[in-house]
Image (cartoon, rainbow, N blue to C red; front, side, top):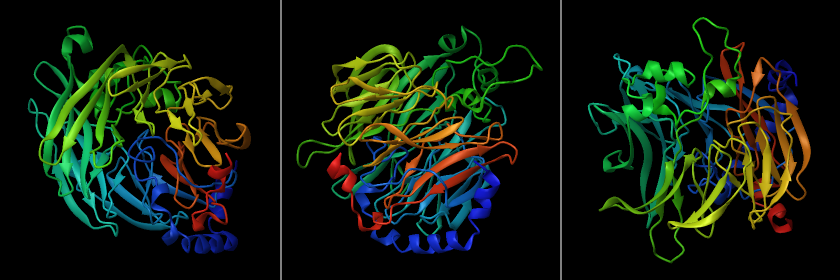
Length: 491
């Protein structure tokens, strides 16, 4: 793939005409297909009920600045694409990749390290974090933007142990009876360890509930030594400036020694983001959704109400390193992956079995329309399971590593790896398109592909020479704007 030709193509008259035509479809987007959350819907399934095309030649490539690993784009029902950068800029693009608006928050609020989320009225919520001067603690803020770019301010997270928190977990939205609450996990350094907490904000950015999910003492983290952001970064994670509070349990060693050449890939350096929550849609009419979060060994379920806040209702102890965000299936089953490569299933605290191992799992599984699951390992291997939890397809690892979940439409499955972007036909899991990034200067595998409500496909790749990331926009089917989903009817 010639990246320069892609930038040139975005200025081609034919591409300009395609962009103009694509804008006409945005207002007809079916809301149920909008990718408003970090991994699709609030249940994190990574599935969009829309037909798509194989990702072969982008119609647009847009420079973004630095985007944190796992901070995927989100898309509103009208097709607007939102991406937050580590410099603290929220960027909005039209469905075809045309720049719409951007807004940079105040420097004292830090940068964005996770995906935004889009509310029912089109408001955009995104969390920023910034380390303090002592390098030990941080401060986090929930920001609200209007669809046209107006900023309604940033509200600080509650303080615990003098720490204002840090997170790379994306916010999720709980909805019931026309009301919404923004649910965000974060970590806080207290005097004797690190607390993992769950905070619920109102749409007015007021704190409604704040509960302790888990705790790890400094002895557990560092073998009895004093914990610091710098120490954790040196041992385990790519330096985002916010340290271990942004990431899950360490699993990969950094190079030993000082002044050695770091030959690790971008995926190795990235670690993996802190897991967000999933919202379990109720099976009973009139019931409220519940909230599910992973906490290393546990899957914990919470009820939530606008008056009572968050209350733990069940948990299951897997006694292993759960690293992926949870997803919830239509029947209420929660699925989560572990560092040792297993996919576990539970429902309302009852264990339902497992599949695997499939390699190191740090990215959320993805639901397919027919009831199966697509799992991408850190090594870059794709495994597809049917509704009976049986393996029906497994790829090689020719594309290289990945910390990115797959994205599924009615017709295709998209997988971004360090070296290539793959498109599979979901009917037979045949690879129908491959886009090779220009290694070592362009790398994928750090951000999940995202599908817009009219069938556009969005992928972020890192351009190391430019010191920036770029958004690649792949075209939609000609009939996608009508809301047709023939693929889901046929598959």
